[in-house]
Image: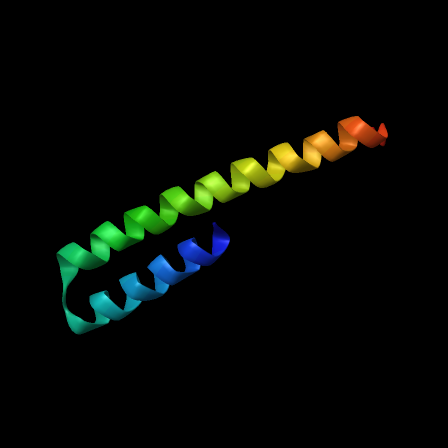
Length: 56
């Protein structure tokens, strides 16, 4: 998921640089949503590992 967020962010930068504002805005939004999903899933995975191994 992080890979897709980075890909969409790069596409957003390139299209913004070329002057395609609508496409750049759309891909930037997609990148933000994917990155937020990645962060949430990552934190859930960390909490699950902490819960399983009782590190807390």
